Image 1 (tube, rainbow, N blue to C red):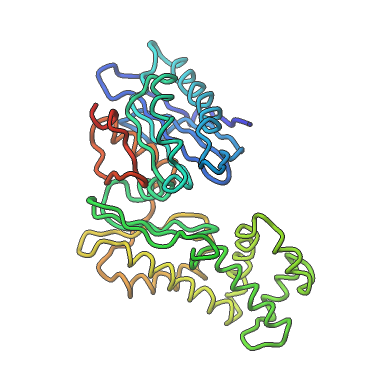
Image 2: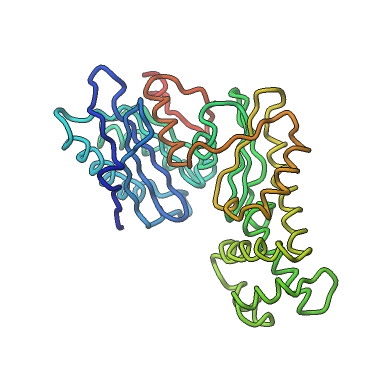
Length: 349
């Protein structure tokens, strides 16, 4: 495990107020590793951070709670020590929020083990355990009603009217994730192979880009099918589709269809009525106008009552938002057994 603490000027800079809500810890666990952030509960703008590039293990029993704690606890202690060096007194950790990919379906071990472990190791009893879609939502919209689309390799939409959660897609590259990076990449490679075969719907431009990235087209199945990271491999071709879309009608058409799928998912979860907001978050949207232009048109058509909002922050920021709300008994996002779980002891405090 390698830790990458934030530079000194970007860490927390406020002394702990014994009468205030203290400090809060946010954790974001995903496929690229583990990130931990510490900030004063009343000011989340400049957190101290630490990073591990080692993803938390997932096995037959779900997400490995022991492995998560093995990485998270040293980073949390390091951040707390850094705060303690800046002023008198011992920093008081008021609340922790952990967001993890797979929490909804694979988080039983975390829900069973983390409350006791964090109380024993960090002295904190206010705890929220959230799916990464929930921390993406909180990072983007805070605790306001609306919908958030989180798209990268996959694609999921999550919405709430602050009484319950509604989810659309996020079912993986074989059953869904329609419009996500793997979906776009696969559609682009399909068009490339059609051009290679001489079938209708092919794109010579995408064929050239596919061979530039992966090698001769005839060898693509042997290079892609055996890979255990097939979704990521497929998604790696999505930026090439966006590049080709500037001049190629087939590539542009793929992105129009992707935009339609993304807007459909947002419409399925967004609460009806004035005041709802829709935000987009995730690496997929860095592809820029080739995707964003048709997506804006689709959202305007399918969600005319919702206001487009810029995402305030990422899922790690969202974890801090949840922890800060929990620290002052101000959590408004709906809790349930899987997407957002607050242990009874934490809820009662």
